[in-house]
Length: 191
Image (cartoon, rainbow, N blue to C red; front, side):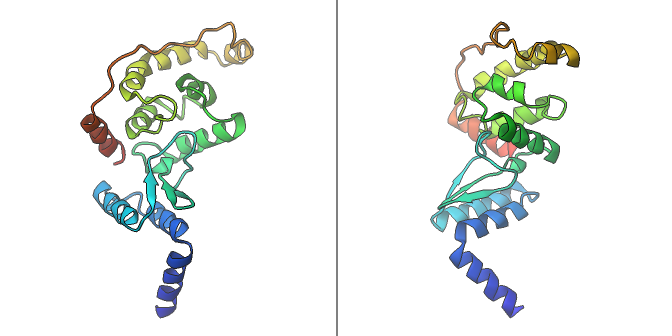
């Protein structure tokens, strides 16, 4: 037991961010209050903890310098298959350039409405569009547009190369949520 304690302390002292990211990843299934408590202690130790990001996050928590980023698996109702599809799509086809680009690159059978809704609420799309209300309001029409566009898999692959001809759906402007509403959504979407 003493040897395990020594090695753990050595890892924490010499590889702090990586150790803490791995530790936070190990408690993802816990209650949000438990995870929140540990995230606060990580911040008190002098490390920055960033929210999930659709273009930056990995499956689990990850460390880069003194920064720890939440993984996509920390978002409630975002299953392992959805996370895997998002990351594989991003690695294969490049970063998501827009909300619509996300729809084009991911598999809607795996990355469904509930997954996208919780990713929006968690702030994972903030790097593409800061106005979360705008994204949530656009979600139903984007889902409908995507399903019509790819209703027949042969038709979808036939027209995949004519993106210049097919117009992308447009998001209507609206007032964003208040800071309090965003915080409530983040708490809800993180479990």
